[in-house]
Every structure is written in C-alpha cells, then in structure tokens.
Image (cartoon, rainbow, N blue to C red; front, side, top):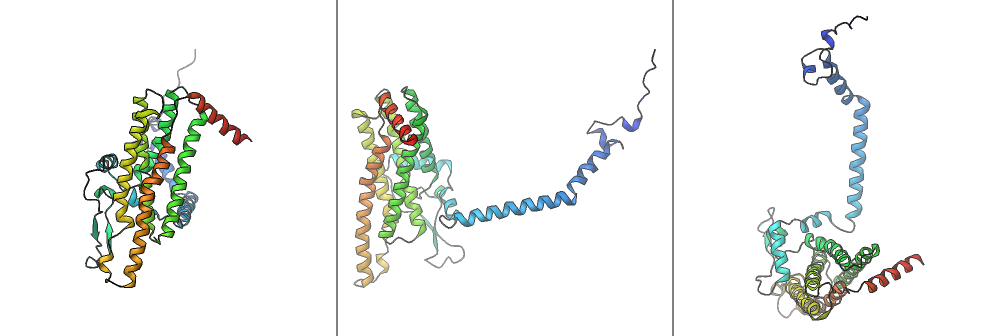
Length: 319
C-alpha cells in the first residue's frame, strides 16, 4: 500500500482564493504581477499611441464633416425630450388651432444688452422649434412599416425593403437639393435656415405613416386606395401643408421691415424678396408636399404588382 500524500504547507493553503490571498503571503503575488503589467513602460506606450490615434481620427472626421454640416448645430436639433416629442406629433397632425407659431428667443449671456445676439431655444424648451429626431425616426419607421404591411398582405419579398428605402431616400435627396437651390435663389445664406428647412421637410413622414396605418385598417389590407385612403391622405396632407405654411413663415419671411426706413432702396429689395419667398413657401407647402406624400403613401394591396416591381428592379440591377 502507498502512503498518503504529505500535507501541504501553509504557504500554499490560500492559493486560488481571491479573498484569502489578501491575508496570506503566498496568494499576494497575483496583484503585484497584474499591477506590474499595467505599469509596464511598453504597455503605457501602447496605450498612449492608441489614445493619440483615436483622438487624431476623431478630429479628422469632425474636420471633414464640419466642411458640410456643423456638428454643434446638429446637436441643437436633437436636443429633445419625451414631452416635446408627444406634443410635436400632436401639433403636426392637429395644427389648426395652435397659437402662437413664432419661436422663442433668449439673449446671449455674454452680451445680454445687444439685440443682435439672441439665440433660439432648443426643441425641448420650445414646441415651435424644428427638430431632426422626429423626421429621422419617422423615416426609419416608414421603411419598416411599409415592409411589415407588405408582409401582412402576403406580398413580402427581400426587394420590398430595398425599394421602399430607395424611394424614401430619393424623395428626401430631391427635396434637400430643391431646398438648397431655393435658398440660393432666395439669397438665404444662413446655414441654420437651411437646416430648419431640412428638418421641416421630414415631418411629412408622420402624415404618411398615419395614412398607411389607418388606410390599412379601413380598407382591410387592400392598400391606400379607395375613398378611405384618399380621405385619410387628404387630411394628413392638408395638416402637413398648414403646419409648414405657418412654421416656415417665420423662417422665410422674418419681420424685419420695421427696422428699415420707409422709402429706401433696401425696403424695395426686401419687399421683392419677400414676394418671391411667399411664392416659394406656397409652392413648397402645397404642390411639392402633395407630390412627395402621394409617392410615399401609394401602396397597392395586390401582391402581383409588388412582385412585378421587385422583379423589374432586380432585372435592372442585374442588367
């Protein structure tokens, strides 16, 4: 018979216990080894190199993005809260009795006595301030909802989501290019005014989503056609047009004529410019929005038409 193994020494009795190692001398060698790795010069050098590269990449991206869009300006449009989002959605859908439409301003803390250094409040503090959170979320929701409705009709194909996303993206791109051209023609050189127009252009997706959902329920899965679909579309279109007409009035038609002396040449130029902006505001709020909302909300409940469109798009890509 073999003799039992000899008893282990007390110096190894605490090995493997993270709590007893703090008391015993044998288990305490792990913490200094780990701390030694952190304090190793090579590790410190690698950490500094990685940190420097990360900061340089972030600075490079910000510099290139700031050539086209100001990051600080975009943060203003995403400064929203949950109560603001709920109130804004109700305002977009039911804008008929809302007053006032003017945006709130506050004096700058640096020069509060200077009337020219006023800034607009962020969306979370002003219901009339445009934001980009609702348009972006409505854009994504529109794509997912259109795909879901196609699946409920039994007409889902992988190409449906791509076609819907492409259509929505092309509409947004054409509208932004049109707004950019409009700001050039109307001599709007302020970047914040252009961003306001881009933000307002996305609220149409809220009305389109409501049109798709209610029409799907009333038409029992037959798309947005028929009297029910056209009735819902007519309401959401008029609500969106009225909302844009009243909101953009303070963007495109600021009331600055009172500061200009009567009978001067500047007053004549401002009046001519005001007339052009009024025409642009009416055409954009009614004509342009009607065309784009009609394109986005037209969905047929026939699976054959969706399959044909998907096959045509696939053949065009393959060719």
